[in-house]
Amino acid sequence: MLEMFFWWKDEHILLKTATLTMLYTLAIWEPTRFIILQLRKKWQGIAWVKRRIILAAAILLPYAFLVGFGRVYLEDYTNLWGIRVAHISVYSNIIGITMLFVFLQVAVYESIYFFSEWDKTKTEAEELKRLNFQIQFDSLKVQVQPHFLFNSLNTLIGLMEMDTRRARQFTEELAYIYRYFLQANEQELISLEEELRFVKAYFFLLKTRYAEGLHLEVTGERNMHQYLVPPLSLQLLIENAVKHNIVTQAKPLYIDIKFEHDHLEMTVSNNLQRKKNDIRSGKGLVHMRKKLHLLGLPDIVINESKSQYKVTVPFIKSNEYESSDH
Image (cartoon, rainbow, N blue to C red; front, side):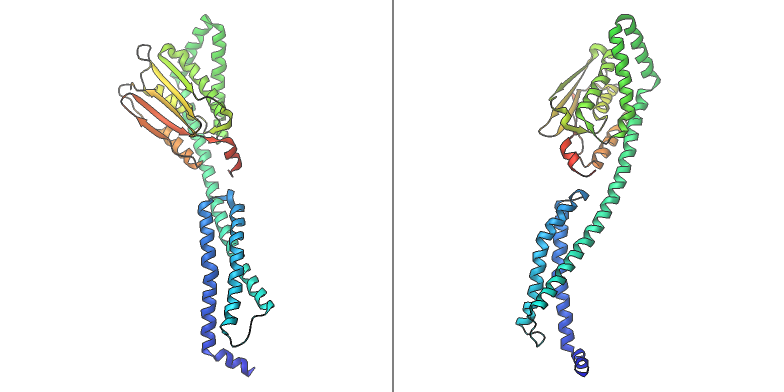
């Protein structure tokens, strides 16, 4: 007991212990923290938790073994404590403790990050749902305005007297459009095939009303079911083109939709012939931008010249979206 008392009174032993503990802690903590943050930077989000943990284990466990082994070896080689410590049990204990510290540090960092990302994802999902409702409501609000219904009914009555087959098609497309509007908020993304089918139905109604004053051309239409896009994206751009430009037989409006699969983007362009005193709120494009941001997709790109207005919107491969965590 007396010898142990003098051992604790030895200031050099205390200094050695404190210094060794501090260096040992830094040798474990900082490199482990650095590796965790670098892996998180490269593979962000909850979807990559498993990969980050596997890679962290592959890198840090060998490192922990070296740190633990190196500590015991240096203590023995320098005769730091005045006694030989190079015993297999000492090596295994220190190496095991080092690995445990590394494991606990990874677990704590990943747990904090997981719950932080989970809360962020939950908040973004709620915001995305709100935006879905807002976009659907704004689009539906425009379509149910009295003048739209009046024009649609007048067109339908005229078709019933002149062309019953086309009148039936007009009625079916009108019903399909409203059904699509009401269901649009139920999905974050929809296939380009469905979106284009809806846009063609929507354009059919516009074409019936404007006749030779309105034209649509679609290029790059292939394998549309393999790609996803936020609902009502194309409809919004066509609606804006018709709403803000003169559309008459004397001054026809030409709308072009071009799909570029290699770049995962679609471009809607039209010739510019602005209406006088045209007021643009830009609300629809603002909502679209927020929605794309929440989905982790690139922003839209707007290019305007004296004669043309062009908007480029990104889309995503369906297999990439399904393999990620949403």
